[in-house]
Amino acid sequence: MQGAKSVSVAAALVRSGRNRANRWILASRMAKYGLFSLFVFALAITFCAPTFHAQQATADDKYAPLPSQIVSAKTVFLMNETGKAKFGDAVYKQIKTWNRWQVITDKNQADLVLVVTDKGGMKSMNPSFYLNIADPKTGSVLWTSRTTMQGKLWRSWNSVAETLVGDIRKRMPGT
Image (spheres, rainbow, N blue to C red):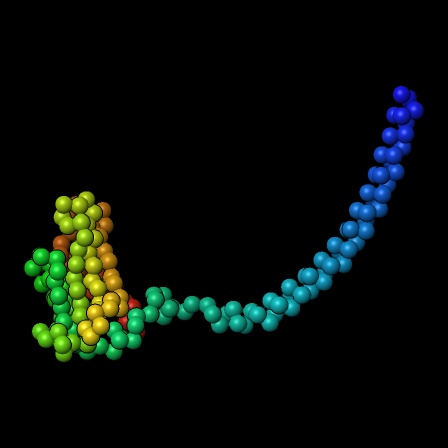
C-alpha cells in the first residue's frame, strides 16, 4: 500500500509540473494575443468613432418622424366615432387653435382623415382615447396618437384633446 501511495504522489507531482508549464505557455500566448486584440480594438474604435458620432441623436430627433403625407397636408376631415359630441368639439377646437390644417366637410377633398375614437368608455377605470390619422383614398392609418385618463378620476375633454393633438404637433418639423 505504501508503495502505491508514493507512486501516485510522484505522478501527481509530475502532472502538476506539466500543468505549471502549460499554464505558463497559455499565459504567454494570452498576453501576446491579448495585446494584439487590444491593438485591433483600439484601431476599430479610431476608425468607427466618427461614424458612431454621426449617428447620435440631435435635439430635432427627439420623436419619431411623421409620414410626409401628414407633414405636407393642408386640409383634414374630422370624424368623431366616440359618440361624445363635446369630445369631438374639443378636438376640433385644438386643431383650429393650432392653425396648421384647415378642417373641411368634404372627405373626398381632404388630404387627411382624422378619426377620434375611444376604447373602454367611461365604464372603464382607465379609458383610452385615440386620434387616428388616415389616408382618405386608401383608408390606411398613417399615425395614431393615444392617451388615457392618466390615473385621474376626471379629466376634461379639452385636456384629452390637447394631449392627442399635441402629440402630432410636437412631431411636426419646424414647430
